Amino acid sequence: MDKKAIEYHVRGLLEAIGENPEREGLRETPQRVARMLEEVFEGISYTNHDIASMFGKTFDCEDYCDSESAVVMKDITVFSYCEHHLALMYDMYVNVAYIPRGKVLGLSKIARICDMAAKRLQLQERLGKDIAEIISESTGSPDVGVLIRGSHSCMTARGIRNASAQTVTRTYCGAFKTDSELKKLLEH
Image (cartoon, rainbow, N blue to C red):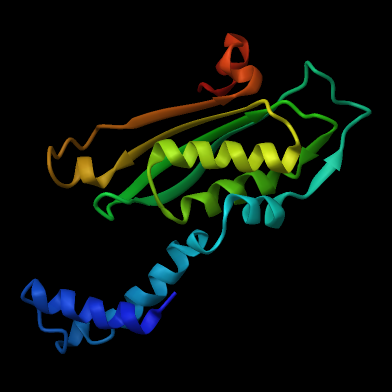
């Protein structure tokens, strides 16, 4: 990430909106924004395969996993930025479920996968697909479901300004596509 270029452009943006980048509260804003963007867009540097490799620590579960087993983690909090307006997507809750195929992910790894996949310019629909793809690669299971519920500031703070609007997306892979009982695992 080119932090110097970000600083330059943030300064220009401040000038373009009629602000004085030399005033007390704004003098260090270009540097602060550059550091923030480096942090919140960390996931841009990694492919889904990279993220699966980084957080794909699994444990054998042959002794206690079977085709009736499912791992479900709910209410994983993430935030992201909409690629259409660079607007914050917030109050996002991710539910993930998968059927183990001989191995399970460490639970913290599921949350880390969701977090890193969200640290990109995203669409909520693609975020669910990315998470499902990473979980599938990490676990070796084709049976993954992801439900995301969130608010988008491009809807709540501008445009229609509908503060209570939430978007819900569902991504179903493998058995989750056809099994209504599996789909229910993702609901609240």
